[in-house]
Image 1: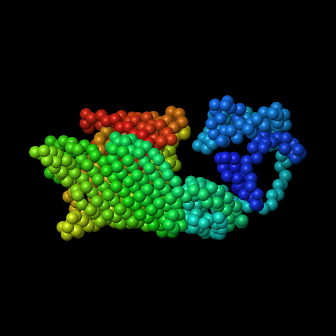
Image 2: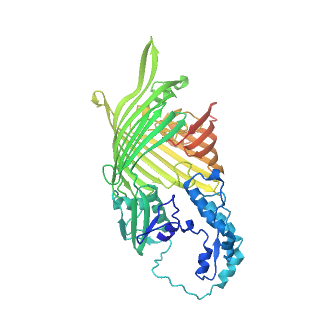
Image 3: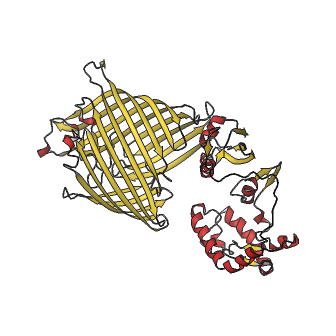
Amino acid sequence: PEAVKASGAFPTLLDPVEIDGKLFVDGGVVNNFPTDIMRKKNVDLVIGIDVQDKLKMKGNLDSAPTIIMQIVNFQMYDNEQLKKSLADVYIQPDIRDYTVVSFDDKSAIIKAGEDAAQKQIEKLKEIANLQGQNRVFVIDDVIRFKRNDLQIDQVNIQGTKNYTDEYVLGKLGIKKGESLSYEQFSKGINQLSATQNFKSIQYKFTDRKSIEFKLRESDISSFVKIGAHFDDLYKTAALLNVTSKHLLFDNDVISADLILGDNIRYNFDYFIDNGFHWSYGIHSRFNHFDKSIFKSTFETTAETETDTKVRTKYNDFTNQVFVQSAISNAVAIRLGAETKYLRIFTESVTNNEEIKTFYDNSTYGNVFAELKVDTYDKALLPKKGFILDVNYKGYVVLINDNGITNNFTPFTQLKGALGFAYTFKDKLTAHIISEAGITIGENENKVHNFHLGGNNENFVNNFTSFYGYDVGDFSGKGYLKSALTLRYELFKNNHLLFAANAARAEEDIINDGRLFENTKLGYAIGYSIESFLGPLEIKYTWSPDTSNNIWFFNLGFWF
């Protein structure tokens, strides 16, 4: 793997690879079609695969990799025909639409190579027939593995200063003495690289059960990110994120979000990641939105027949401490405790006096647990994989201005989601997700019900999206929901979508076995563009249950 990585270490794009104390880069910067070198080595046959790009106009030289490739291409064009003539078989894939950084297009690039090779298939078969049936190649110092059978008993990790071996092994998904497939091992390497904590990751197997890693940590440990977002609930939002790694302890990361705009919010996270060992974290957030919501959503005495929407201010201030165990890169368990302050009210004016009517103005002491299994290929608009997310929350104590309330009855809520995504012919993606929630125990405060409606993917607490209805349009102590979304990728990063969802939200979700009684339906059609800011989406939603048609629009990553 060291030699292969060195061969792809393109200057300005990837760091040089150190082998035996020497630094190596992609040899293509010297000779990107070395048929002449092969002839000097007196090889019998030369198969040349030309992935050389054409010379670009001045206006298209807009990045360092592009400029380097232009320099390399100048060398090729000096003796292009001579080098092509030195190849016994010449193959040139059509990759004009791709560059050296088109990593997301690897499937299309491989397909272009296969198509080009098919045009020379007869010559390739002739070469194959020339190979003697009894020729034996002896290669020393090569360790062979069955493709799906790796068992690593010994791991030697070098070059780490701020990250422990447990952290590295956790990201790699390696448990000493346990077997894993080569695909899992490769995914683990990508997972470790995705942390951006290491600018160089080199490894080699010293025998069939031992591996040696040479890591070089990134010089950047603190950085600032900015973002922008708009949706129909939180409206405009600008994000300022400050992240710092290994600031207090090894393996730790601190992340702080300040969200400015129509609804000011913040998120603070501190996490010590110990891989497969128990990890520790702190989470704090303030969340606020101002939305017209039916009075019956939160008000116990509201009459449904004469229900109207009133402007409601929703404030949530939550602080959590938790421990987390990662069973694998895709599976994690989290246990913790929290305080949650809810301040939810409406405002009215009577006799020129502003009056606040509170639905809740209390602090709760809770315990919680979460099991999450996530194999989606990406968080937004997944094309394959599944997700299982099971949450438990126990409301233990109620605290008001006078301290702990003695007449509060503890209750529990369970909530879960199961989703699958699969793509047909690399174009049409079917995404199915089912959810359920239930309240166990006596809870008379409707604030804690499950509230359905809206389009958001950044809801807090018990709010859940549902097409055809607005935020919190129907709710209950329990709910069942299923949704099917079909996305067709018209062209790269542009998706046409259709969605259908069905749900029930009731005081008694079991309803004596009548699970489909009073089921709400909703549909959506829309268009989504994956941009550098995040998804840009517009959706037209409707429900046959009501006469309301709702447009939803969102721009940017959800936060």
